Length: 317
Image (cartoon, rainbow, N blue to C red; front, side, top):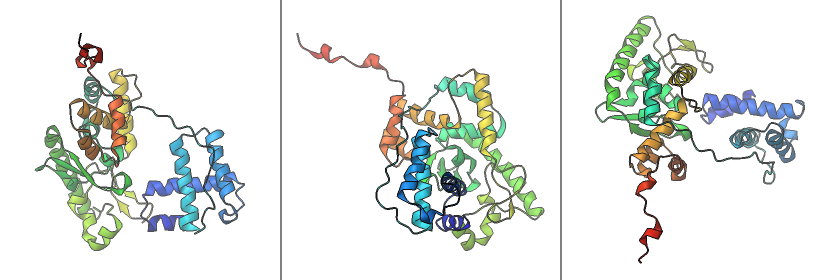
């Protein structure tokens, strides 16, 4: 497993992906008794494990696919053993579920029951269409007040993009930046002040980790030890805090829909489409690789069918 982690880090996989892949690989080994080395197993054992997940565990298709990716990574990248033939396990059921979307009034109700940094983060989720971790990982340097843009770095799939920076958030975010500046200045005086900087940049610009621009926009209250390096740094806030705040606000607003942090992103896309924004523009703002991913929001947007004319009314006579 140390070798697996080493190869994952060599290929610059995210820490969460590393944890997930290692967990799936261990589950795969334990499923087959925990004694056999993966080298002595192959296509038949992989299919048996994946089928077990689908049939006995009743996991979602995305979960089964993640397990498959982890095991293929093990054989292809770590053991350098090709998996003979095409894998044909029992497939987990894949249902098309339309996203849960709130109306603008419901969004306002939920936001009305939030306060402080959590309110600011929730407004970014809705106003800029950010994913939860994209918001949590924002740096001071990612805000462009002049051009009214937010830069989203190394998002899903390792891609960068720009998205909308709502003008109404400029004053509170300027205040948040000043709060971060005071905290960072104190950290420097205390002998700390470092944050995580991607590997290549940290080597090219050794001072970047202590520069103000690289500081997290929503920093944690205290420093913590980084699992990989063992250094004490000030990380960003935990996502669980925002998740709990959103759940509490939804309950207070009396909304019974299964609303979470991701719902704000769904609302961002749906409300833009309802306001007539071109779907290609929404695709770019959302960071979707394919427009068909964005098209799912057309199934839940409000449609005024009262202005649609029946073909029967077009017949002459």
